[in-house]
Length: 115
Length: 113
Image (cartoon, rainbow over all chains, first blue to last red; front, side, top):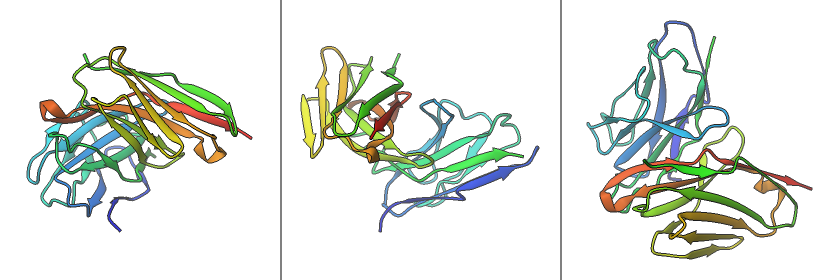
């Protein structure tokens, strides 16, 4: 089955710790995205990648970092600089970034909690 | 700037029709989407409409687009308890080669038995 997987489902972070959220897709999509969702709010874009070895900051990139070394994978690291990391994190992918093929498909999400 | 607005909550009885509304500000939107999110889950793409269409129907779902008023609606016929979820509308701007989606804050649909 083609799709997007995220792991882990739940993640706990201690003070001062960096944690990495995994996102993998086997849809052969070029573009991938990370969103943050807080209770009662819509989705806010953290980072996006139009193609492998390329990524750009979204609206709320501070305290986060990403890499895109493989087409299938777009891991997100929540650094200790992110002072309020508790949220639900969603990864998405699309065939391409724009050009009429930007319909995004989402993974199941990772809930990050601070100890 | 770009903005998408939705009402926050809608309650209906099982078997009734539900209508979820969305307004957007950017007239250059190319695609408009409806996503469904069940508790603790990711977003599921329900349907989308291209900006040159007025209506799209897919089984129990009907999407209406009024470009003049920048208004999008999702009608769910014969609403079931399994339809209880948060519904997000979103817009994209494919013609400008921008893949960014702008999401509304979501409408919580409560279906009472």
